Length: 114
Image 1 (cartoon, rainbow, N blue to C red):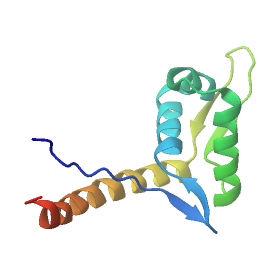
Image 2 (cartoon, rainbow, N blue to C red):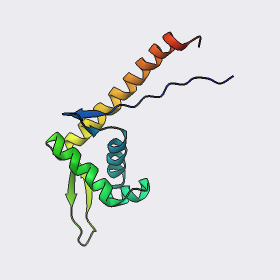
Image 3 (cartoon, rainbow, N blue to C red):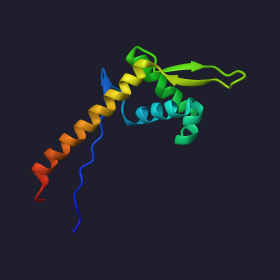
């Protein structure tokens, strides 16, 4: 017997345009861990130009920076998350966790016997 499973994804929009969801979340979390957008791109198998476009677009729509950028030099530069980015990530994590738990309960209510 095959079992039905619910999958859900959440993203936020501004004026109908997607601004933040799982993709940007994963990108920022990886930048935070590695300290570099370039290293994050390599780990996520994403082109630097695509990552840069995602970050720039989100920053433009949100109206604030997500990354503090330090250009190359002796130490090679890097990126770290702004406080606003950390707040956004935390809120997204907390929201998705609670929303997924709630959606799972609703799913069980309606699809338990199907």
